[in-house]
Image (cartoon, rainbow, N blue to C red):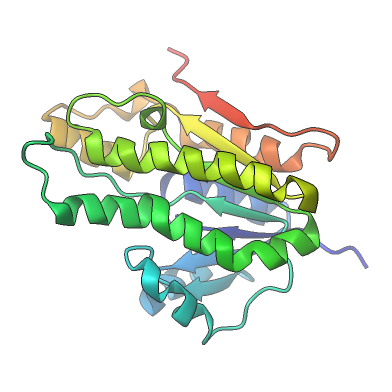
Length: 232
């Protein structure tokens, strides 16, 4: 009996996460999709027949462990794909703590907590952890301070985890997409006061190809950091 790989994906409802989920589901892999509430879980289960769902809100990292304790968990994970994220722009002089907390919780603290909780399953499978970061995780521009700080932190999390888990056979990859056509990008353009033209930006399918390349790489190699930029 062939055992198909199992992947836990955050952000599978739209953008890059949806592109990755479609590709992995289409080739017959087993999916575990994280949803923020039961309604969203039902929607995701409808989109990907046969997929399992887990309910936990990345906006509230302190409750993820409690939420998981009330749900059946996978025995092993071949990959944990951190793709969900939130963005809210504004100058440092105007950002309140609530805006900082929202982005740090969803983009950094929850990925750290989710990784902590799933490490036994990842070690059992000698699996992969992929953090979908951002160009903002390498260089911060005006009005991007909170989001970029969360993504700079995510790079540090990935780098430390890679060193810590090397001996356990867990591979860790950071992917740094440039601007990608997605609902998040539409929101960014709205906040920037610019017209949104999705044809100018990277297709989510292209980023999905980069992510899947990293997890499918033979065991004798590791993609540590992968930057994906618009090609036109």
